[in-house]
Length: 463
Ligand SMILES: *Cc1c(COP(=O)(O)O)cnc(C)c1O
Image (tube, rainbow, N blue to C red; front, side, top):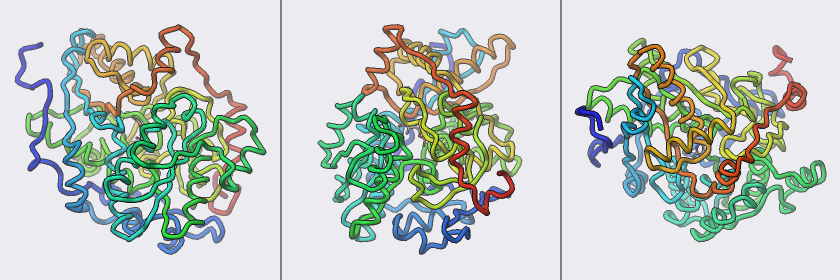
C-alpha cells in the first residue's frame, strides 16, 4: 500500500450519517417537464398518481423546492442495519494499473439484497406502512430490487407480490428463493395473472420479458387490489432522492479527508444510483462551486441516453403509467437478454435526462465483454465480486485511470460500486467459458423501439 494518509476504507460514525435526503431539483434552473396524464395530455395532479403510489412518495416526487428532505427516524433506524457503507480507496487497483489517478469507490453491496436498492426499499415500505396499506407490488429485473423490497416489507410488516422478469427468474433461481425466504410471492413475468401480461404473451410468445412489461403487471395488480400500492425501484424522482444517502455519505467522508473528486462515474439503468451518488456534488456544481465531470455508463445493448430520443413516454411497456419526459428508446423497445438485468430499461430518470440535456452530465456505453473483463480484473485485485451492472462503472473508472497514465494527469476518480454479483454466476460462467457475446441494437432495432414512442400532443415538437 502507498504511504498515504487516506485509509483504505473510510466509514462514518452513526452521528455523521446524513439526517436528510438531498433534493437536487431545488438547485436545477431547468426543472424537468412534469408527468403527463396520457388521457388528458395535461400535467398529472396528485389525484392522478394516488391510485398507484403512496401519498408521501407523491409529495416527494412533486417537490422541486426543498433542498433537504428529512429522513424519518423509523427509516434511519433501518438504515443503521446496513449503513454507513464504506468509501474505499482502490489502492490495489491503482497499483495494478500503475496510474497516477486516485480511485475511490462507494460500496453499496454490503447487505443481503447485494445492492443500493435497499436505500429506497426501506423508505417506500416505511411510507406504505405509515399510510396503513396492507400490501405492495413491484417488478424486479436482476432480482436485487425484489430482494431489497422483500427485506423491507418483512421489516415493516407488509405483504408483497414481486413480478420478476422471466429471464432473470430462470437465470437466477436462487435469487428467487431469497425473495421467497423473506416472505414475498414471486411471479415470473410476463404472466397470465394480469391483462398486461396476457397481452404481451400473445404478441411475443416465448419472450424472456422486460422490466417495462413486469412494471405493467405490477401496476395493474396494485390498482385492482384493495389497500395496495405499486412501488418502483428506479427512474422516479423520489427513488433517486432516497439514493442520495450514497452521495451524501461519500461527500461527508471525502470532505473529512480533504478529497475533491475530478470525475464521478456511475452505471445507469433507470438512473437512481448514479443520480443519488452525484446529487450533492451536482448541487454544488449547479451553483458554480466545482467543475466535476459526471459520467453515466450504460450498456451498449440498451443505450437510452446515448441513442435515445428526448420525449414523453410511458414508464412501462403496457402503457399503464403516466408519461414522463425522458431519454427513451421507446416503451416497446425489447433489449437483448444481456447479463446486466438491472440496466435493461428503455427510459432514464427525468432528473438525469434533464441534466444530460443541459450538458452537466456525459454519457458513454460499454460492451458486455469489456465490462466483464473489468469485473474480473477488479475482483482479483480488490477482492469484491462485482455485479455486472456495477462493472459498467468499473470499466469506465479503469479506462479513465489508464488515460491518466498516458497523460500524466493525477485525477481523483470516484465511482459507485452498486452491488455484488453472487447471483450472476451464469453470466460469469459464460465469460469464463469464452462464450459471451456483445449484442448491440442496429438502427433498425432502434427504429422499431422509437416507433413505440407515443405520437401525441405533448410530443408534437419531436415527432
Ligand atoms: C438496479 C441496479 C442498478 C441500476 O439501477 P439504477 O436505478 O440505474 O441505479 C445498478 N446496479 C445494481 C447492482 C442494481 O441492482
